[in-house]
Structure formats: C-alpha cells, structure tokens
Image (cartoon, rainbow, N blue to C red; front, side):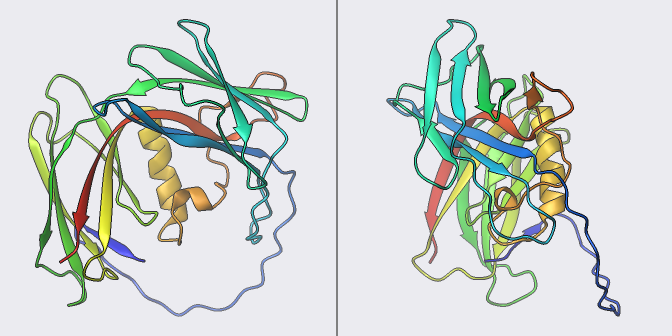
Length: 270
C-alpha cells in the first residue's frame, strides 16, 4: 500500500534507462540489531511494545532474511542494575522480554547487550518524551488520484524543549519531523493513502525520538524509499547506528537501540 505525504511539492523526472548487469562483490556479513520499543506512559498499567530483532546482512540483491537465533540478549537499567533478559521466540530472529516487567522510565539510562559469535555489542539510550495526537480526521482532498484518502493529523508541540518525532503511519510507513519551525504550536498536515477501503482501521503513532535517532531514520527512510514493508524490512547498507562492539570495534554492528514514549490514535475510514 503506497502512501503520499502532502507537505511540499515534488518534482518527478523521468528518463530512458538501459538495463545494466552489475557485478556486486560478496562481503562479510555484519550483525544487524533492531531494538525499538514504544512505551505508552499514559496507560494503566504502562504498556511497552517492542522487541530485539537480530539478523545478518546479505549481499545486495539477496532478498532472503538471515535471522540470528543463538545470541544472548538482555537490557540493563544502569540506575538500579536490574537486568531484563530476552529470549528468542522462534526462528525469525526476534527476541522478546522473558517477563512483562520491562517498563522503561524517564531519566534513566538503559543498556542493551547482545552477545553473539564471541563478540559483545552494547548500546545505551534513555526514554524520549513525545506529545499526544490531538486529532486525526478524514478529509476530502486528493493528491494524484480521485481514489486517494486524506487523513489530517494534528498535534501540539511542547514549548519547553526541542522535540524530534517519528510518525508511524501504519502499513509500514514512517515520517520524521522536528519542531524547528513550530515549537510550542499546533501543527497539522495531510497524509494521503491510495488503497484504503471503507471500514478500514488506521492506527497512527507519534513517537518521541532524540536527534541522533531522528537523523538515523532520515537516512534509513531515504535509502528504503517506498519499498514495501517499511524501513525495517530491508538491511541498511552502511548506515551506522548507536551499537558498539566492545570486543572488536572494527567488527561493528548495524542497527539501533531506541526507547520512545508513544501516543496513538485510531480512525476508521468512512
């Protein structure tokens, strides 16, 4: 399902293309660590959604995933020393908290640890605040096609801090924005979907992120483009995140460890 963001005009250039065979050399696989968690702080009890996904990079034109299922994974609350173990839930490379008590809190630092193939990889982060979505309503405008569905999203930024946001617009589509031009103000934008039927539910999430993850996601989204499945379904080429190999710094891992306060808004299409 393709979506289009209506924020700035786009110029499309078309040209003739020749088919070229490219000889892409094989490279040594690198570990990819995707560890992103959404924390719904206003729910009671507080809900944390997320997982750690481990895989190995593949050659450029390979489409098969290469999951890692034999790593040791845990997260440490560096304030209290509490360790939260994670366990593999099958053969797809997903690791989930062994219990339901992993609930990140503000003003604490959390360290992700992944031990794999005699290497220890770590990353540290804190829970980044977000703001609530004020409203999502269905509009009647179109962008390129009369069958487009417009959703109008509005939220109010916090005037007391510099904020960076990651919108999860459902169906594997994401959008980054910052409050550089609307700090402390209400911001509204339209997003267009071209394959939504009446009765379809859309869940929009607003995640708070830090500037480093904001920049990282900008690069990931630019690289993945409109590929089906979203940015986390394709292996990033050489985009480094915040993962460090403490055993051998030259054998770095790709990916990111992120904790976001999240607000969501559900709407059913007319």
